[in-house]
Image 1 (cartoon, one colour):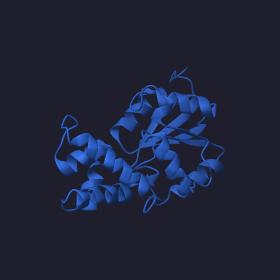
Image 2 (cartoon, rainbow, N blue to C red):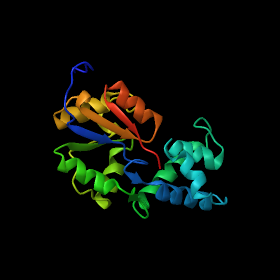
Image 3 (cartoon, rainbow, N blue to C red):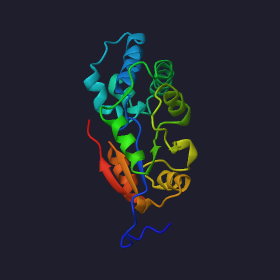
Image 4 (tube, one colour):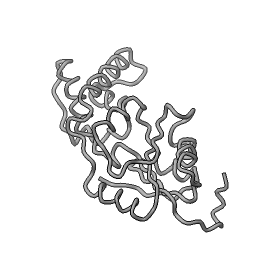
Amino acid sequence: MNTDPTIIRPLKAVLFDLDGTLLDTAPDLGFALNQLLIEQGKPELPLDTIRSVVSNGANAMVSLAFNTTRDDPEHNPLFLRLLDLYRLNIARHTRTFPGIDALLSSIKQHGLKWGIVTNKPRSYTHQLLEHIRFDPHFDTVVCPDDVSRGKPDPEPMYLACTQMGCLPIETIYVGDHKRDIDAGRNAGMKTVAAQQ
């Protein structure tokens, strides 16, 4: 792909991370983790404590709650059970962050496309997006299942651009984690860091 930064091209698309950027999924992830703690006879954790590691994924949440690493024999069963509990409660409290709906409408009003590039597996992403219906509708969704390497590798960013018919240098990527910013930069996109 031609990502020569000396060529001035108009903006054609905006891509977003999903969890922590478009959607506040921490309450449902926190609910699932606290359900797991209750099952294991342990006290619940405050949502603010859980929120601090949510962007690092379910493995980090299990490590926080049970003081384990991925190498510990008890870690993977806890991880799998957390995913089961999350799937059962995936859209109980999840909402778009304030201002997101207006932002997406503005993007469309300016004739731009928009899409999602997430490290959330496709089965969870699609289940969540069945409950949270964006208006205007997205033009593409890229999950780690669609590529050989997820963010911060630029591969999912390139795929999203291909699907939307634009170049990375015509695209902005918005995310809340360092790997999001790295992925956008690695693909030659302009990047914006979202803060909660």
